Length: 608
Ligand code: F6R
Image 1: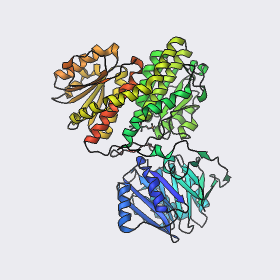
Image 2: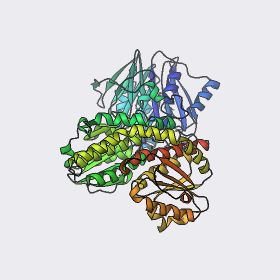
Image 3: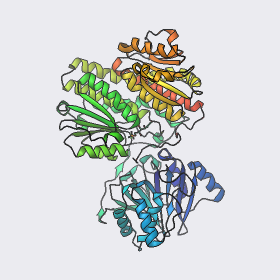
Image 4: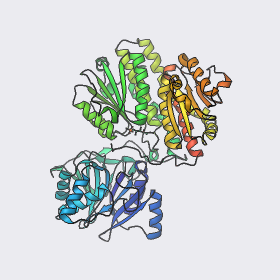
C-alpha cells in the first residue's frame, strides 16, 4: 500500500523517480508525486490520479530538474485522493513521502496546533509527520528523525529531504518495507526491489528503526539510537524482464503464462529422489510428525490457497487443519496448543494482519511456518520456518501465479507430512510427487487449450450484475478463489457457494440468465454437483461448467463447458485454477477495465 522511492546520483532524478514509481504502482495508484532538489531548493510536483497523470502534468508545467529527490504513489488511507492529499507533504524545511499509517496522528496534530500554531493543508496523517519533523528540526537531521520516531506510532516507512541538506535523502523504516539500492555512484530507496532493478540489483534491507542516509551516491546507516550500522549488501535474483510486461498486454496475463515455470522453480529444489524433501527449508519428517493440529492463516487469495491445503492435508495426512482469515484470527483469542503448527501464507510477506498473527503466535509455544514469495520480507524473517515460493515478482494486483505456487507448496507439505506420519506409503508418496512434477506441463497445455473458449464465455458474462461460483469439496475451495478473482477485476458481484448449500437460502437469488459457474472436477462428487447444476439451471441460470475432459455431464445441464485435462482428483485444483483466472481476466478486458490496477485496491496490504 503506497510505494515510496528516492534517488541520489548523476541521472535525471525526476525520470528515475517516475520510472521507479511505475514499478510500484501496484501498491497504490490514486495519486502520485515527487520532490526534487532543483538548484538547492526542493521542488514538488504532484497530482491526483495515475502516475501517467503526473507525467502529463509535468510535460505541461515542467518537471523538477535535479539529481536527488523522493517520490510516491498512493493508496489513500487518510483523506480522499486529491492533489492536496497527494504526497510529498511538507513542513517549512522538511518534505516527506510515507508508506503506512501513523496511528496517533490526531494527538500529534493537536499538539502541533497548540504548540506551534501549525496550519495543515491536507487530511493526511503524513503531513502531520512532516510538520512534526519540522517542529523538532534543529539542523541535525538524524537527531530530528530519532526524536520523531519516539513520538509516532504505527507502521511506516518514510523518505525525507531537508531543505538545508541539498542532494541528500534520508529514509527510515518501522514495519513497512523499505530497501536501499546501491549502484555505481548512485543510491536509491524503494518499497520493493522491482522499482530499482533497472538500475541495480544490489540492495540493503532496512530493518525496523534503521535510518539510511543517501549522499554523494553512497549510503550510510544508523539505528534507532543513532549508532552506525554495517549492513549486508544483497543481490536480487530477479532480472529486469521479470518486472516488465514482456510483450503481453497486461501483467496479469503474463503472470498466468508464467505459472508453469513458477511451479517448476518452486517444487524442483524440494524434491529428492522422487519424494518431497523440505529440509532446505529447515523442515524434516520428524518436525512434520510432531504436530497435532494445524492452523493456516492468511488473507484473500493466500487464504484460499490455505483452503485447498486444508482439504489435502486432512485427507492425506489426517491432521486437523483450521483455516482462518488473519484479521479475524488475531482478535478471536484462538486456542493454540504447544504442538500445533501455524502456517502463514503471504505473497508479499508484509500483509499487516498476517504479520500480526505471526507476532501473536510467537507469544505461544506453537511453531510458525511462513509460505512467502518475497525474499527477506517481514513474515519470512520472523517465522520459525519458511518455505519460499519462487514465483518471481507478481505485479498485477490480482494474484495468479503466487496462488498457483502456494498450492504447489501445500501439496509438497501434505505429501511429506502424510508420508512422515505413515498415512501413505512410499509408493503412494512417489506417485503423488510424480504427478506434481508433471504439473508445469499440464498447466501450460491447459492455458493454451482453453484460452479461446474462456475468452468467448467471458463475453457472456460482461452484462451480468451478479453471479455465483459453486462447487463441492476441493471444488468449493477453488470456487472461492474463482469468485474473488472475477469480482476484483470485473466488478461483477460474485459469491462462492458450497453447491449443496444453495437450496438452504441462496438459490432464491437465481433469476433468468444469471450466470452460475460450477467447478466440477471432483469425480467422487460429480453426480451430486451435477444435480445442483441442474437445480439452478431449472430456475433460469446460465450455467458454465468447468470439468475434466472425460467427465460425463448431460449437455442440457451446461450452457457452456470448459474442459480441462484429467489428472488425479487431488491435484485437479492446480489445473482448474487456470480457467477461473482466464474467465476473470477476459471479462475484465472485455469490460474495458484496468486489469492490473482494479479500482480501490492495491497490492501488499500493509494496513489493518
Ligand atoms: C487478490 C489478492 C489478495 C491477496 C491478499 C493477501 O488477488 O491478491 O487477496 O492475496 O491481500 O496478500 P499477501 O499474499 O501478500 O499476504
